[in-house]
Length: 142
Image (cartoon, rainbow, N blue to C red):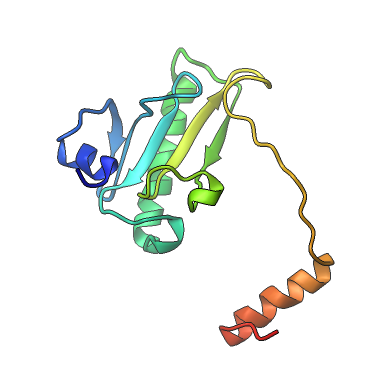
């Protein structure tokens, strides 16, 4: 079997589809962290957000917005949302097909919780200079 999300798009694997548009599809997560947890994916296979073309990203985000409004107007009535996309295994990406999580929040300590750990290797201005030099040159030279 190839990518599980590609199989959902082909209809080989059944999913609870909430909405779709020209380039994206939204369906309930099979292992939700809260009621109404939805995944929005491009209909074509792109490994991650960084590899996804801007026109497809636009349709993914339009669908994220549409589904968020549907969930907000439903009887679920969440208090807020987390929008998450992990890129790479180290960041928690489990399916190597770009996807956005729409995770409704009903209380502070339930569902998805982001935990931040600080790892500073330099001063903020030093990091900024590295990023800007790369942006200007297309390559960073130490």
